Length: 463
Image (cartoon, rainbow, N blue to C red; front, side, top):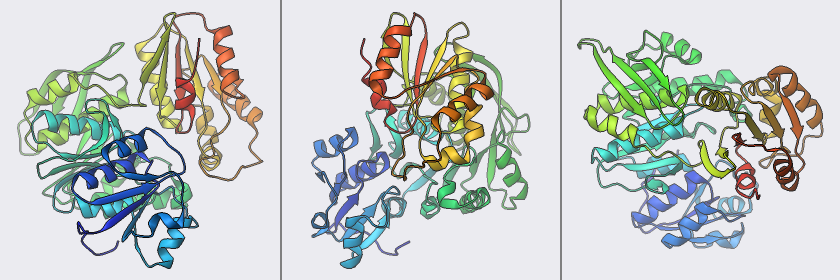
């Protein structure tokens, strides 16, 4: 990490400003008074938000874009051969990863850092909601649009900051930590880490960075975290989950169509056990109950009133691209979800099944990255057991070279065999539209799954 303090006289250029995390950080720094600009190869809603605020955005990558810049911030998606990165090196401009710049910005705040392979965006949003309701006015940098304030980032006036930490490139280890949450550890971003063991070592370093006076909140239901906890010598953590040994144990769970209800038993050393009854969460699924309990545990630990915590969860309005309802036609409901890993897909479909026992579920799945599919092909093929039909879309490469060994037909057959479900191969959006016009009956659930262009496809379906 570069050792310098960012000054207000710097001109800061964001390469890949259209990313949710990059745009959020740029907006916060702009509000703080920094001279901020950026570039991206395509337009999206994140860029529109930046432009509306007054941030200059170039609609292509070019060496001329950085001519007056003194600091360049790069997205983890930007390759080393990017023309702006190469020009910055040639001009000897300081180049920082997003997390390195974020660490500079929040270095003087009391930071709550949320990470994990899955669920970190929802957990971050829930903590941000609770602290905002408690009038602690935190600075927020999230990986998704929080519906309650229509953005992924907000500059607060207090000394608290709630930050989602992306582990994809290892840079989350640069963030200064007071309190932290690790939701789970799963096989993700192996293209960067090379193997699962290296990824686990990175999470261990993250947990060890959390000071004992702050505490790390770890999910005891996660098998990899169970192993990490056994090796932890600092005892700088508390646990949560359905596991009976958890410090914050979930009990008496009820799954309703649009919400969940549960009790929480709190068992903290040297303190009397406490039970919080009838916590209503305005989200469905056991994975979201886990996310909410991570938020409860942390906020309870720092002294937020329990009534404020319960009210915040009951009124939580969600995050965009997390089971977001986008259309209703003839009692058929269409949802959009960011799930692009087998664990996430299984959790989302299980949630829908638990809450809609008598309804047919149709999954519109767009695989994201050849490397992820190659590594987890078997796991993907088993993740659709709670779906009645899978519509398999063309793979979204996300910048990767086309892998000619990928066989769409064989993959569809593998899903059909391992998930015991019918699979239809989708060629394009027009095919998808025609399929729904001809085959949808009524009272069916359709959910788009993936991190690529599937969200746009789902929103362009016409009847």
